[in-house]
Length: 449
Image 1 (cartoon, rainbow, N blue to C red):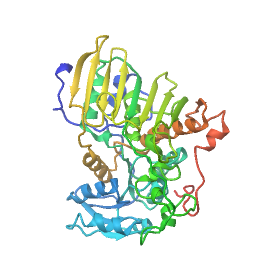
Image 2 (image 1 turned 90 degrees about the horizontal axis):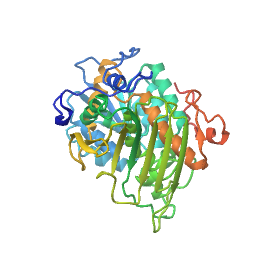
Image 3 (image 1 turned 135 degrees about the vertical axis):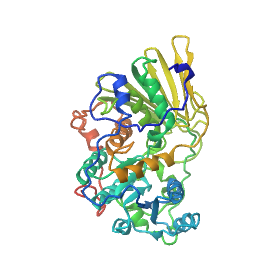
Image 4 (image 1 turned 45 degrees about the horizontal axis):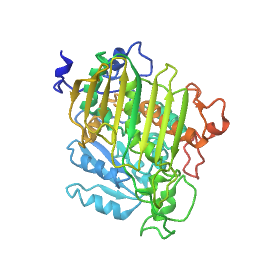
């Protein structure tokens, strides 16, 4: 096969992390193309030709996209839509008049519904794990949007809960199911770039800061206290509600944990590291001019060093209207013989040798659709087969862990060493305390599963 005449005609294979460290780059990428063993099914299992009962919890924004894709599938019963905002429920349900899902405002009603086999969770980040763990305890399979965890410790709880309940988990990093990712894996496995020693992820999408506004009254019908959930009780403010909640630590994870989650996940995948880093440095600041307020920096640089000596770099710039290498979100995989520019926008390009001669390529730079529907298909297939998904709970934990570790190091302002075995900062109690958070009752995450 001539890699310079590379095409996308071969069949697509799932991409998965494996718990053990392969002996070579080629063996790692080969391992990612093999489905793991079937999960033991302790409870109800959908037959191969049976429709899967699905509910979507959180239907605004990305949740609306999930609803549209699921409503178009003939093998899915869209049992229920759940959102705390009745106006959002009405708007989204009107887009699927051919379906008649039950509209509810309390996720606990969804979890009690025996017709629901699986849930898709696309709420604000601080609600991901309180709902996901309760869904697993109710014997539902779970698709959870990125980042799965709001703080580091939640990721370990997700891994443990999925194993204890023998449930299927899919993380919303849909490039794990993309054909272009499979093609890139084959090129990296060929050895044409040599060993990949460094990977870089970037997310450069201009984001306007939220202008401060006075507190007010929640929209009609919204139970704002329940929207706050595990977060501390406080007055309603429009900038801490729809969409702009992402800029506040109590509810979101900033830009590194929003779109940056995709690019960090892919950087770790390309680097072939299925563990946590051992040393992290970080810097961030506010570079944008003008008014506005956010609790996260609008630019950030993080370096993660692994025990193997490999390095993962992350950069975000939310004050610029341009990206790197022609894309706003992307990755670079640096090998001894060349490098690959890869983007979740649907392309990659290899450059070889000191003269950076063009090598294998697929697609072109630019905005293209992401494979959300294919990721759904993989999840539903695994709900039936009980096989592990392309983005398992463990995959989510290792990738989301990078988000949380980078943020902790930025907040402490120190270079920190991390122990992947104990999942603590052994020399820094203050940093280790930031691996978790306080939860307002009754929305704790401990002891759920």
